Length: 229
Image 1 (cartoon, rainbow, N blue to C red):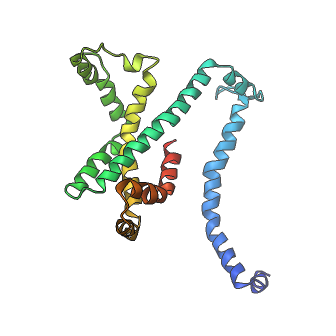
Image 2 (image 1 turned 90 degrees about the horizontal axis):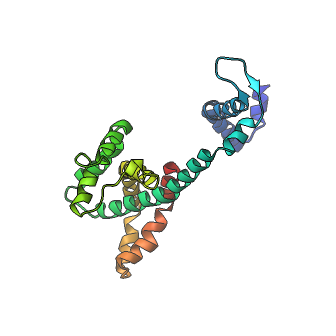
Image 3 (image 1 turned 180 degrees about the vertical axis):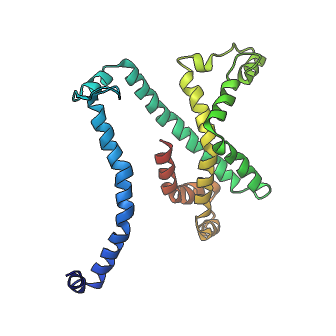
């Protein structure tokens, strides 16, 4: 029966069937590790359960309680602030560094490695270092530098106004290395003929950046925006 079915298929249909058979395993794997936990988590969120006692279905009461919590909205606002401020700043700095690093020939590999090291550092080690930098005088270097200019000590992590940006700074710093490498790869993937043609036409640096580099980097920028948020 299977052989008859295959005999009636065209070459294109057989190729499509073969492709779907090869894709079947990764699709099932993705569904199992992605969608099943998502639906299971949603189902658990509709229960009143302490993991030890009996489960009790309460519908959307947990969500109603969540939306009535002021801290939830504060966290949500801070998350959007981080996405709208931290991500663009991170992408801007990483692009500028990658753009000028691409033009450096001497010590290029060393400089690139130095920028990539923070990305390889564990989050715990990075958090301890930055926490140390934010400490008051005479431990925290940031407050020591501010004291040189007669500026009062700043609470940084203990301030409601500064805490978000104090956390944003090390996050941006840690992600620069990866983003720089991706931008460098995107810039170097642009055909050299484009730059040669722009040079013949007399295009300046800004025009090359606006007309050639940035349009070619749109997929790269989109990729970095998605993984950074």
